[in-house]
Length: 382
Image 1 (tube, one colour):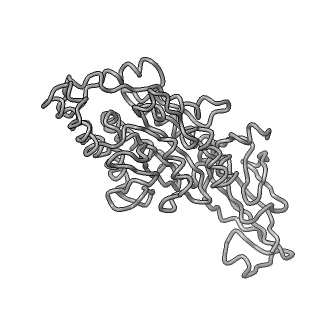
Image 2: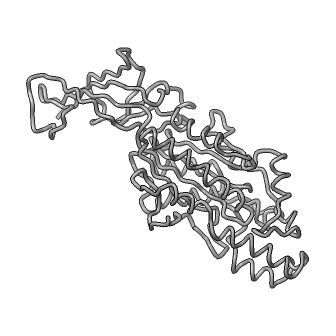
Image 3: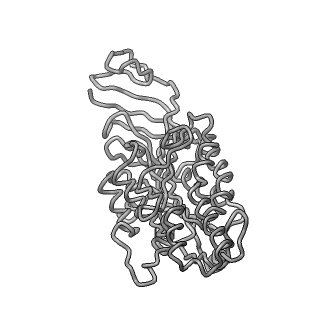
C-alpha cells in the first residue's frame, strides 16, 4: 500500500462471528483458556475460525450545530437517523453514537467538547439500549436551539426588527441562546484530546459526522473583521490530533463526513429562513449561512476521508444511507489473537485474500462486502 493510500485509508473493524472449527492436532492445553477455536501444538496456539465482514466496533461522533438557525434541520434529520442506526443494527455493528455541539464557549450552553447526556443519563447510545432511537431523536434536537430561535422571533415580534441592535436584545440573546460562533472542528478536537466518558475505544474505529448550516466560525461577528481560525479550527489539525492522541491505527481507519451547505442554491435557501415555531416574517434575512468549506475539506481531498451530504435536502434518508454505506463498504480489518502470527492463511470460499498484518491488526487489501465469511488459520507462540 503506497504512503498516500496508507495515510487516508478508511476502514471500520469487523467483529468476530465465531465458526467453531478447531483444528484437531490431538493435543489440548489449558493455555487456550477453553477457547474452542484454539489448540496447542509444539508449544504454539493454533487458531482456526471464521469472521464475518459487516460487524465490529465503531465509535461515531456527531458534531451538531446547536445555533438558532438549525432547529428545522435538526427536526428533519432526527427521524431519518433511525434508518442509519437500524442499518448498523442489521449488520450487527458494535457501535457507540455520541453527540457534541459546535458551541465551545461564549454562550449560555457551551458544550466545550463534552458529550450530550442522553435521556437515560448515558453519554452515548449502543445496540443494547432498547430505546436507543428515542434517546437519539431527543438528543439530536437541541432544546437550546429551539429556545433561542423562539426568543429571537418573539423579541422582534414584541419590539420590532430594529430592536436587534439594542442592548436589551443582546442581553436576552446571551441569556437564551448558545454561541453563534460555530466551531465544530474545534469541538471535535476537544473530544479527541479529552475522550470524555471514555467514549472512544482503543479497539474501535472512529467516525465523525459534522452537521451545520455554517462554516467553521462563520457565524461570529469577528469573522467579518478578518478574525482567523485558530489551530484547533483547522481540518489538518484534527487529522494530526487523531494521529498523535489515538495512534496510527485509529488515524488510518478513521472517516469524516459532512452534512452542510454545499452550494449557492442551498446557501440562498438558508438565508431566506424565517425563525420561530410561530414564524415571524421580521426574522427573514437574519440567518446568514455559509458554504461549509472547512468541513467539506475532509470530503473533497484526494483520496477523501468521507462523503458529504446537503443540509438543504428535503429527505436525508438517502444521503445518510450513503454515509452509512460508505462506512460499511470500507470494512477491511480484523483483530487477531496475537501480534504477527505464523502460518497465517486468509481465505474466502477457498480463495486466498490479499492482506497485510501490523501487530494484531489484519488488513484486507480490498474492501469486502458486509456479510462475507472469511476463514482464518494461524499460529501464535506461547
